[in-house]
Length: 244
Image (cartoon, rainbow, N blue to C red):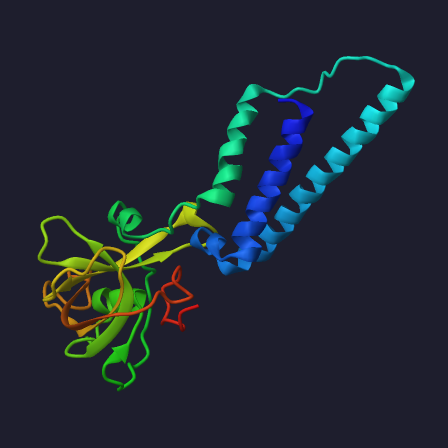
């Protein structure tokens, strides 16, 4: 790879990062919002390095012409570096879609942490609850506080083989898309909405096994399913914020 292509790669990579993190929200498909400033900074650094390298090359070329020196450029790097052009160009012209049902359907449900005790549930009905809290209550709460309660959860639709039911899903990332994990609640009593649709589901725990133990199914009998906009905290298992 010659110097001009190295400059082009640096500039394209910098512009791609700035496009994804500063001028659009594309980066939030793959990283947490807290990582955004680092991506913006990286984009500026790459862009400045590319411009500085281009300016330095012009200066060296002018000096060589003035001195009448003709040498050989031994600064080539391995040809495999050409492959770096692909992600640089993709950031500018084609951004892969956000994580969704395709990813979740190929992952087992995230194992929730063991809890030693539970606070009383609010009397609100329907009760807003996260998928993780619902899972924990169903499989660990020996007081059976979730029994008979009408709850409301939100997430994206993940179809399951065989039909007749589907998974309400939240994809959680700690840093970026590479460490994504899925929390799932099986939904019964409703037709299957289109995959990747964000919905709010109201219903009651679907009986089975022994409530308060791991034999109890993490499942809901749906009373209503309502389409909602994707919340701004879509990569957290949290009560939804307004859509960005």
